[in-house]
Image (cartoon, rainbow, N blue to C red; front, top):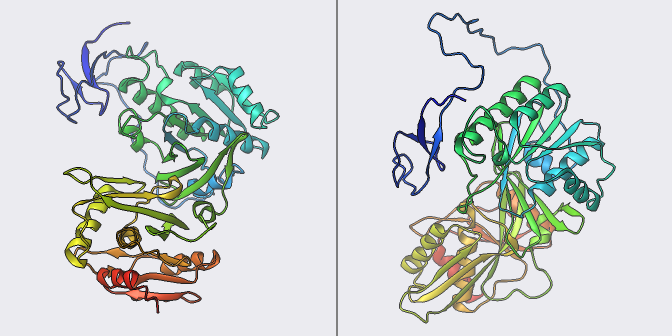
Amino acid sequence: MARDGAVYVCQSCGAAQSKWAGQCPACGTWNTLVEEVQSRPPGALAPSKTAKTRGLVFQGLESQTPAPPRIATGIDEFDRVCGGGVVPGSAILVGGDPGVGKSTLLLQVVGSASRRGASCAYISGEEAVEQIRGRAHRMGLADAPVRLAAETSLREILDGLKRDRFDLVVIDSIQTMWSDAHEAAPGSVTQVRAAAGELVRLAKKQGVAVILVGHVTKEGTIAGPRVIEHMVDAVLAFEGERGYPFRVLRGVKNRFGATDEIGVFEMGDSGLNEVRNPSALFLDTSGERAAGAAVFAGIEGSRPVLVEFQALVAPSAYGTPRRAVVGWDSGRLAMVLAVLEARCGVSLGNRDVYLNVAGGLRINEPAADLAAAAALASSALDIALPQDCVVFGEISLSGDIRGVSRMDSRLKEAAKLGFKQALGPSDLDGGPLKISGVKRLADAIARIGGGDWT
């Protein structure tokens, strides 16, 4: 293969440089520039200035052709995150930590979809066919009509997918695919970008839905250039904390549905089981609520979810107090602590603060501010909140409690699970729940400290 020249490509952002440097000038990361040979694909012709093209053909927005129906996989939690099923001709990127269960989930997806009549293929670059069969047998999918292949050559995969017609194809994983049109090593930015581009092009041209499995870096982002996330139609993050059996499939990007939609699964001996009622799973209703715990009524996508915020405020053994948070934004915690001290007189500057979202779920919405503050105040004052109380509301820097979206849905979910009262913004209309509306955070802290919930 002819060598057109070597460049140094950043394995983090994909920027190409003419010479090596310790730090990438584009993204600022260190020791990520790797030498790659840029060459023309075999048989490709040099660009000609006199070559004539077919020309660009424009079309109108109106169309008489009905859209093809979505592919219902039979796994409701997966279909929910995709927006009601997999769209034919779409490309979906699924990322997650090693061992979280990406391959298990997608094998269940193609197994269930194939039993419903869809033509499915599972192509692995990491496992042999016998290994996939063994895993399918343990999961009770041995009789599913899924076509299996173990291949890393992009040319062989594309030829096979063009020869045989499929409705849904899983590529596990995009980092193992290798194109002979490039001399870069498998997993490099050049190879990942080329493989993803060809597979996305195949999906659009053939009308086959392609699901790509993506590895993640130690920072939690999908390995490879960010351009892949722009190329695909949907990006799904499969999350799970070590030590918890729960797994959350979260929609990060979706051209055919809502973002931030979640699907909840529980890992078992025979694979992943769908969780129909996540609120009941994440809450502990076995006994009295201890000091430092507050139940937050949140919204994940279109679904109301109740989770427990757990806080511990303890004397600091060192000169610099510790701030540790799991499942919530650390910057948001720092803001809530500052408002508690400046506006409410709760002194936490010389004490260690630990905050945890029980169950391994990660909360991103600002409506959790009041629940976190209530848990912190409950721990600092050593006073437990009522067992049947839910909390939600956004806190401003002035200490005001602001209303949040879909408050009625939050309250209905709480009432369905047996909660009787709610602490939140003053404009709440609780319906069957007894409302403790507050305008300022100081009023909420005073209500927790005084135990007055009338």
